[in-house]
Image (cartoon, rainbow, N blue to C red; front, side, top):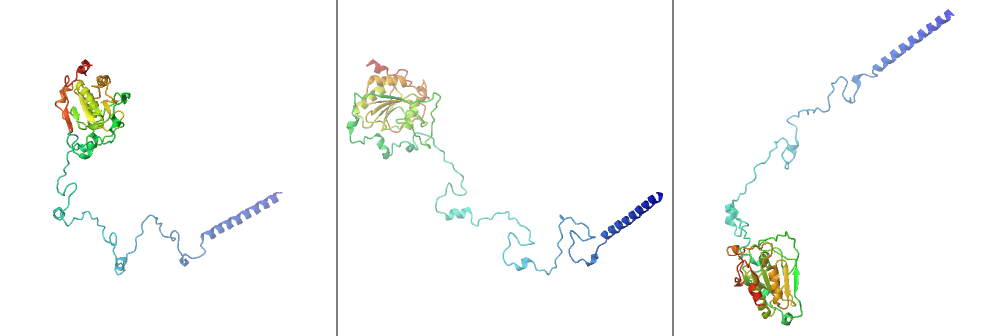
Length: 345
């Protein structure tokens, strides 16, 4: 039994030694190359054995070419942009100057310069907002015959304007917020209105001189209505007796009144009284209706002041087309309205 164990151990030791030799010999075969390095004719990647490792981000230096080598510049016969190879980059910072001076231009040019000639200072013409005399054509030019249709009767049937006792007067009120302040616009802006005849809206800065006019545009009389004036309008084709009667009543009630013809009145009611935001259109003049309208709505408006006499004489006014100035009834402040007219009723 002892001999048997001894033989088994001897066999195991012999087997282990033979396996170790085979492993060692196999490892030795892996390290030995199958050919010589000097015999390789191909390319090495990433580098040949024995060469140092060169990082890829390093710039390779091109080999110097001989002075006899022909460059592309020698063969190219055209132009280079922006410059030829090897030449430094040149930036042109100085602008090219004109060969002719401004004096030569002025001497050769026979036309007009806009807005001014060279070497002349810039001149700004002052804008005239409103002086009551210049640039009036934007609203109405009294010196232009083409605007004469505003005060001429051009109809062929005057019977359409006959007074009608059965036709009642119409009172119209145009609502405005209590805080509304009408704008004042210069003559470089046109003014339009939402209703005609206009009783509120924008106007020109200068008020009209109180009295009777050949024609007064709404852009002018609205400034007076804003300070509490009464405006009498009549169609140019209205019967003259009715026009004179109404004008006599208005001029006898207050100083701050205006009279003007208007084509914005209908043949059915060719007479009207206007206050700020209110109008009374009539076919026949009725004294009690006229006096009631003046007493109720005169001296009322967003620019109305009690002591108007302090500013009437000193301020600049528009008076183009004025026929007759208004006369004082009581005072320029009109402290009593239609006093004499009520006594005669």
